[in-house]
Image 1 (spheres, rainbow, N blue to C red):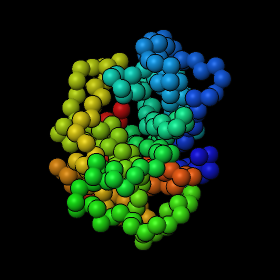
Image 2: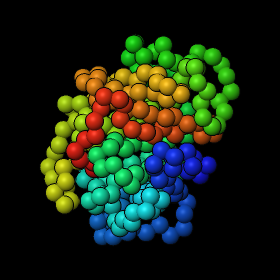
Image 3: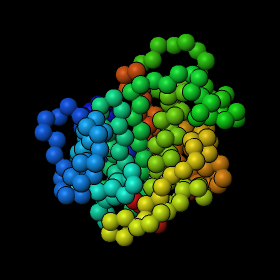
Length: 248
């Protein structure tokens, strides 16, 4: 994962990494401590690792950040701070952006490959042609251009896009708001499924993920292979999509 730092830095993103095995994980404040105390042991370690990863990602773009409370299952950041967090197989990663308030932000780490049978849970019939039917070794690094995607890659692309579109408040109508969180923020709570998004190819091996209900709302996603898994992250809005007014 550390090898991805230059790639993300070139896109204006900071990368933070943490593991559940780090010694002495401690909450950064009372809100984090209260949230962690209510969780089973394994989930508590993942939660704290995710918060550490988010602070490290923000630090990578020159922003400090104290505790990160939650509203429901969503992190709530102080004004001027935002990061996207993902967990897989005991590793937490986060991406953050220093400039461009309102730009979509999202990432997804999948270190356990999904079976081909999972495609029906992720894709609709008009997307199945994107799948790679060839039986090829799965190599780490940037994916080759002009080839199909694995189910894991498409899932990661959609998951990163779902976080970005929900987090910027430009998600589909089913992304509602339920009450105010800390500091009066009203983060969206995603419902529905990844099948409500449509993924398609873009230039240079990237893909574009659009809301089916409003195709003008879209983001560009890069999916990078990491060992036998993948890491997907948002680059920017797709052409035709303007920045949102708020980023949570």
